[in-house]
Image (cartoon, rainbow, N blue to C red; front, side, top):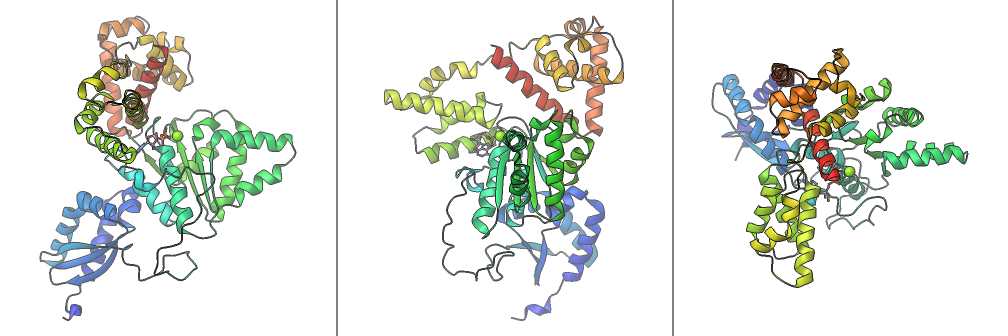
Length: 456
Ligand code: ADP
Ligand code: MG
């Protein structure tokens, strides 16, 4: 068959150049940069994408848009199909020097600084994390190129450490002679302090400035630590100039970090910033189901569902509930029925996280987050730096407690209930224009709930 008879590449080129104008930079980098024209056939165009996951995402997000464009440009219906670049091992992947083996790659020893079960294979992808997971995957396959640096942010237990270590593990397995360093910001800080004390600054510098991939977890820890920020700033520049990959994680968007030097902040913001949200029910179910299978325990879908309906905060809490149940089942050597699950997890489910939250807790958490005092939020001052955080606190109060607007108003400096209503409207409308606000509020809500569960 003569496949050259069809060549629609010119339509693809035009489509992609039009799309470039229409989608945001982030979407472009994320989804279009990695699509390549492959070939044409009778029914349309074959595109090459890096993974099945990627293909599904592109189909879900953009298929109709792309096909409509192609149709208007070519005047006929062109169907899109996809080939997966990976399964097509004709070219050696970039950066590997050895000839492509026909047998599977010999297994490398595990990376000593990474947890071996924090890999992409065990990371369940859902709506809440697909953007971050896909970016992470792309980075592992091609470190130091498109998404450098990358910052993954989100609340506790949502998979930041798992993802960032997956990048390390995957790249380590894929490339020979690749230096991968994973460190928490806390360890980075401590090592730096020790290095100064022992007059071994150069050892420290060499350690982190000579790697190919630097993964730093929980950078919010660096707040207020000016000297460490300074050191990280220089490390960053050295690695950036050498096109070495950096990935950071943080418990909130960088814009919300207090006490961070502007120049470091701008470095973090320079690359791709992606967030992790709490998983929805389907994703929670998929995650727990996977855990149950991997632990090889017999827990029915009904029980999994029960847990997922009741534990909504994050993956760590989900896992904790499962662990508790499995431990009990082991101990008494019984199958876990719905009744047993109910009874054993009673405390977890009725965790008064939501119910016992007081307005004072909310004020304390929000005040701390914005580096204000508790009294600032309860007081009368209307300066901008206080007024908006106060409105956010009111909003949070209305979202997660049963207090009326009158009660909330009273606790916030004896204000009228209309002030509270106005505050909520203002936050709502700001959320529409400021994409960082909603994740911030979700983060605050989680902090309040955590605070609540600690003090109960
Ligand atoms: P964080 O660093 O954001 O606090 P972690 O990466 O430590 O969260 O994740 C908490 C736990 O939840 C870990 O055991 C991790 O393996 C698991 N986990 C988080 N997200 C997922 C996911 N999408 N699929 C499977 N396990 C997950
Ligand atoms: Mg973590």
